[in-house]
Length: 330
Image (cartoon, rainbow, N blue to C red):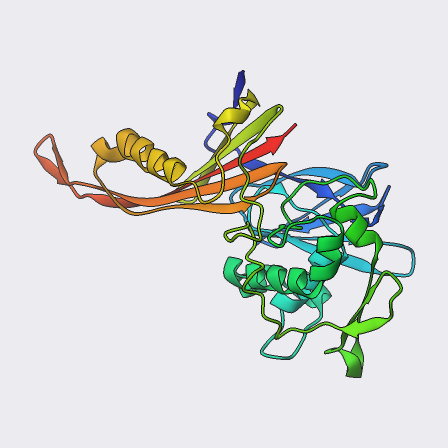
């Protein structure tokens, strides 16, 4: 097992993180320009490979990020979103979910405007709002997901996939999504495998489609096999470092709704940081879980006590801490 520490001893150097994923409409979007923008309005571009895959380095301290890819010469663009580094696919499904998440009440807004003004508007897309939008998309596509053996809680933003005509790619192959513009800006239609267009139902009951698979209908991971890679991103008071562990043992990949993993995470956290001060607001969550990728996040606040140095009292301080574990099957 190889461990790579990406921490940079040069405090003046930016801390980078990687965004990667697949751009596809069923068929891979090969040799297309992918652009990301961060909360400071900084754009980074790259080009997809023959399989629609892309990878780019971005400022790890400027998350979240919005992404776009050029589909064809007609000017059609698909959008996506990443709360942090890791997998960020760009597909008609991510575009639809982001369109739903960006609306104001029942009024839909142009995603190109959100992208160009992202530095001012990024807070519009909160994790909770985006997860609800993802679940609504899955609920509207329930029959198609079931037909292709894709679980209800599949996170189509964060789960790596190949444009090979199976699973979620087969779902994309069967989709034709039309999003209205101008006077029809609030109109969204979905054509399922040539069966005729139906309207996207924004008020659909999505209770059984929780992203990450928290219920019986989702994939809660477990029984991991094969070779995995673990990326640990640690953020302390806004500064992020990453460590990559290759050949991570499958048996150590946590499963969804795993109380043992939660207890172990809290015990390890307390053992590591408890001596620095008091630990509060501890939280351990499964961000997403599938057969090929599991993402967990630990957050907490560490409050250090006041200390006396050379007769001077140094006040205590509160430090915000988060750690994201991304387990990806190689």
